[in-house]
Length: 334
Image (tube, rainbow, N blue to C red; front, side):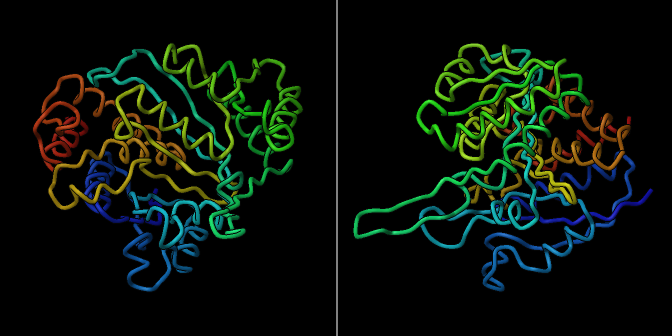
C-alpha cells in the first residue's frame, strides 16, 4: 500500500535528519508519496508566516505528517510553529514514549515511561499582555472539555498498550481552580476504567521521584506547561532528547516529530544524530499500519547502538549522519 504523507523538513539540522529518516523508511520497504512543505524560520522568511495555510491544508488532507525540528525565537519574533500546528489542527495529545536503550549511556536502566501531555491550552494558549510598564500577565486556560478528552485518551492508550497505571501530574494544591478542574476531570474519567490503577502526584514531588527512581511510573498525564518540562526531564533519564520520539495526535490528523531543537550551530556539518526522528517515524509507521517495517527499523537501531559501530558523536562514536544512516540501512536489509 502506498501512503501519502505531508513532509516538513524544518530548519537547522532538520533537512539532514529528515533525509536520513526517509532513507531508513525506504530501506524498510514502505512506499510513501511525500508532500513537502516548509514551516518555521524558512517559511517565515519566505512568506511572513511560520505555518502557511498550504501546509495546514496538506496535513488536513493527508491526515499524517512527519516533521523535522523548527527554530523558535526566544522572547521575540514569530510564534512557535509547533504550538501553532497543534492548536490549528487540534492535535490535543502529545505522546512521548521514553525507554532505556541498551548501549546508550544514562543514569538508569529499564526506564519505560509514557508521557501524555494535553497539547492545546494551559499557559501555552498564548494569552499574554503588558498591563503597565514593568508588569505582564499570562493567562492559564484549562477547560473541562479538554481535560476530560485528554484523560480519556490516556486511559484508552493504557488499555490498548497493556499499561497498568495512569498518574495525573498537577499543582492543584496551589492552582486550586485550574489544576483542580484538571484533577477532577481525571478522577471522573478514571471511574470508567476500574481495571487501570489511577493516582496523582504534585509536579514538584513527581520531578524529585523521577530523578530518584523513574521505573516506579508507567503513564504520566500532564497539562501543557508541566508536560513540556517533565517530558524533557524524562528524556534526560534515557540519554537525552536525541533518543526520544514524539507525536502530536488529534481526532482527524497527526504530526510525528523529533522533540529536540534545530541545532543551528551544527547544521550542514553532517554530524547530527537522526535517531529521535527515526523513532518518531516508527510511531508514524505503526499509526499507518506498517508494523513489520516499524519493527525492522526499531530492531536495526537497537542492534546498531548495542554493537557500537558507526555511531554519531553524541552516541559515543565518530560517525557522520550519513555513515550512521548507512549502518541502519545495512541492518534493515541484512
